[in-house]
Length: 181
Image 1 (cartoon, one colour):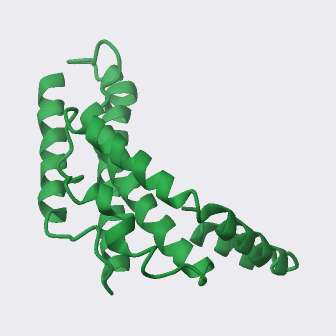
Image 2 (image 1 turned 120 degrees about the vertical axis):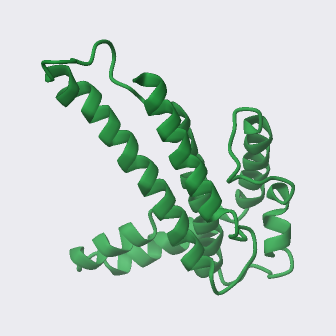
């Protein structure tokens, strides 16, 4: 049964990968919000399946009298790692776009999409496997180094923004959600 659940989980990952393979993740286009939504949907599918399988094997099938589940609850580790990768891509895109939004003084030439996302151009982050993890981690480190110069300015603008909203807790909640990335 574990083998069947592993195969099914991996099939879900392949299906999500196929659906997301046509998305250009590193370009600046009007579809970037739509692309981020597709990535979130893919991560949501992975999350829901892994939770469902874990609940089945930890709660329901343990009490199934004819064939009870024995052993540890099943965890779809490959799917969980793929979901983590999708969330990392979402966070990368969001942090870049929010940096542009909150720091309009950024020079478009020095902070262009081609320069900031250059570490990712030789990678296909959707095709996740353990062998590409070191390359991905290296690209993430390079990206974080590029973004570290802009972070203090963006943090200052966000702080000012939330100071202005201090009297409106509902709007603060909405904005916390919007800028959580």
